[in-house]
Length: 298
Image (tube, rainbow, N blue to C red; front, side, top):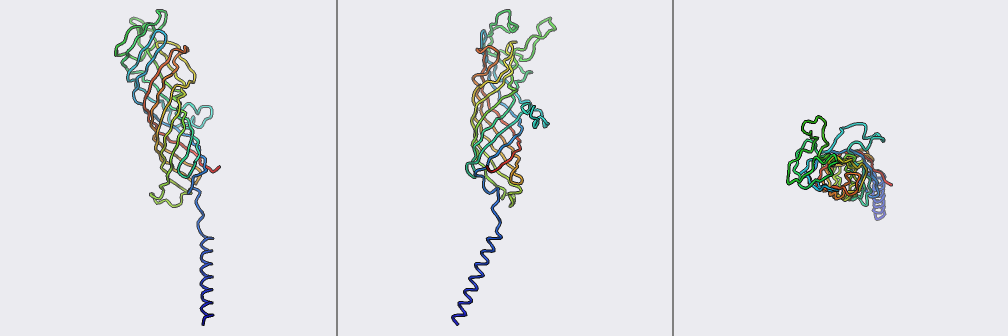
């Protein structure tokens, strides 16, 4: 009788071990998208921008004035092949970023936000300050004292003269308003909220982050008819924050959409060939970004 019980116990134990082994063999392997630590990513995309109005202060030899509440826009080119043409990739408004996940949720990255800032030329803005250029200078027609005086920024015509005089001011960062920055970001997978179980095929992530960096614009400005200075120059700093959605497809590729806003302070903008001719301004910005990228373990 006892031997029969022992035999049954041994059989049950054997069946239990066999079941556990079968479960281990047939269990689903861990998904590639389950963890991010150690992964490297890179993306490239395009953006649109909006800017708050800005007070722009210009100073140099024989002039010192401020343009108040200057209105500016971006300079979109739309969807086109320039975004992937190596010889023309810097012409559109673009975003490049590469980063590394230090754990499953947090990554650090460096990137370039290539924005464009163009002061509207059809605006009349108030100006305060003085202009006292030598009479031989083409811009001396604007000599005078300004006290919150409305000034047409666009090309004016002198009385009885069909030749246009130089504009009071043209001002843009179009090659571009380059924000070189580093960010720390958090990523959370919330695919389950949409009933997605196989995240190796499709995954939805929420990302948010903050960044800091410097501005390296190539400013195109003509101040009072003076020749422009056309070279890159470190002009100030910026801080930013973002929130976005990441759509990962087949583990390695993704589309990412972001809203990114921040503050830019440029206190040393080069405007002419003379080093003592400078401008300064600060403003807020908002980017809408769509980018395409890849994510891989290294």
